[in-house]
Length: 350
Ligand code: PMV
Image 1: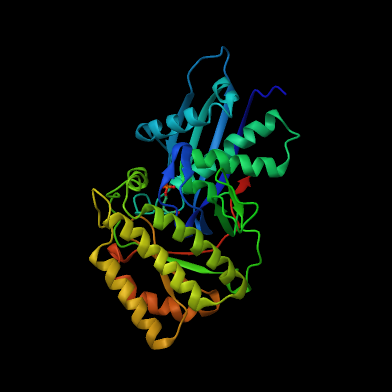
Image 2 (image 1 turned 45 degrees about the vertical axis):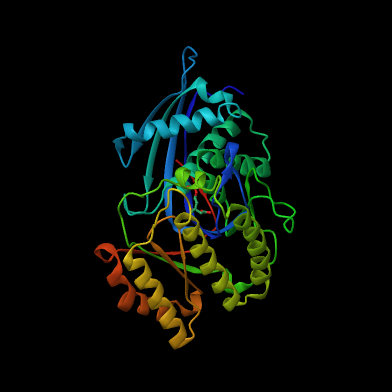
């Protein structure tokens, strides 16, 4: 089909890993399987305007606007992405593209926008492909969107769908793949259906270690093999927890995964400490509060100092009170974001 011009908008969320992806092989193949909660409020909205070029050229031809302004310094990242997906999307070079993107969370909040940003862009590219091939099946669309997003940023492949997404081949999950994320196919206890994630912004500075540098530190890491095995085991254990709804097991697993991620960085060469003093203050406060009240509240961490506080919705009033009274003081400018498990990306009609 010939398509001359048009416009496509997608809104895609961020995600928070419970079993962490840390370490990769060539072509963005993960060294171990991971699983995440898709978020709901932290998201990127991207519009792709496309117009067929009069004469074909050998270059990707695009302009990039971030929050309304031309953004030259983001362009190399997008060019790299386009080059990686070129083989799978040869039609891209036939169009002049204008990409307009914005995040729902504050710029440089220390919240990585790569997962939401790359998945939103991958979905726009897929919608253009669907214009050219209207008969495309929905499952193919979603899988390929996740496949492309993975090539932009590994964890982005877990942001297409909700509410729980697995990425990376795992023996216990037949549909799982190293190439794209899939909705967790097993039974999920209702306690997880509305799980809350309050993100405490401890340090809004730019990341000390980019995730690609971080993943590379797992090459030749003395504990790498043991870690990759452990991730398989933890994912298996978590699939039981999803079914039973046992929150004690859930919290232990999730916190252990977060601390393992950080301990991998502390024990690599070069080594890094990505937590800040206030990260530890918050963790200790959470443990103290849990001990004192029995409330099912736990934390997880990304490759940075911010803390994700996880808890079931039915306790959200009382836990949010605790967060506001006792934890927010440790955040930079007292900033935090309230999020929850979500259903994945959605197309916005222009
Ligand atoms: O998607 P990347 O390459 O930015 O890696 C993200 C890695 C972690 O966020 C630390 C863990 C994860 O599984 O999301």
